[in-house]
Length: 258
Ligand SMILES: [Zn+2]
Image (cartoon, rainbow, N blue to C red; front, side, top):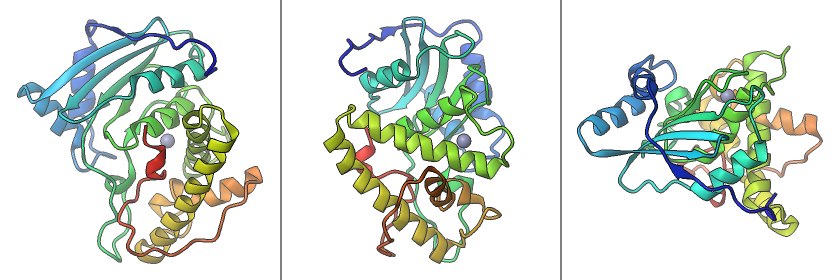
């Protein structure tokens, strides 16, 4: 795919109903977005402090982004993500609403459980291109891939939600490594080494300091649950290095931020 010419983004205007939809998503249920990050960005947009950027990638994708100062979208890389996935199962354009909140994922105080406010950054409906919502700037590309896997109907149908999430997240991270490496094996090996250590180190802290041990603990689905999925895929992980000073609970190594 990287040898093919990139598809080009064109500016667009939000279509009828898209801004209403964005507002509904931004101000809607804070079930996962407990910090109100979407609403904060929407209010910033209404106050003129956050800019609206609409871009379309031919008939393949439409992105309606609300971006505070300092957030630089990786448009070319996102183009490659859509190109790699190809057309959605229903042939309609992939649609993404992105509220680029600057709040990063950090571990809470020692002993506190991890909840959606510490880890989540997007959502979508399974088997639907109706609209993917992303509400952080950090790891937006990893979240895009994760949500596209759900939207493309690639969840394991008979599994529980935490099990599905753990497998979708595991694949999202493997795909991100492959795409950031541009398909080059030495680069993929270097990135996988960083990422595999990041996974086990982050999981160790989540388990030891934040009670994330098994499927009944909320963040298992994104963090410790990945170890079971890598085992199912036959991928070995290194031993954790126990770094209690690690503050970030992002799911992927910073080298994978594009
Ligand atoms: Zn998910």
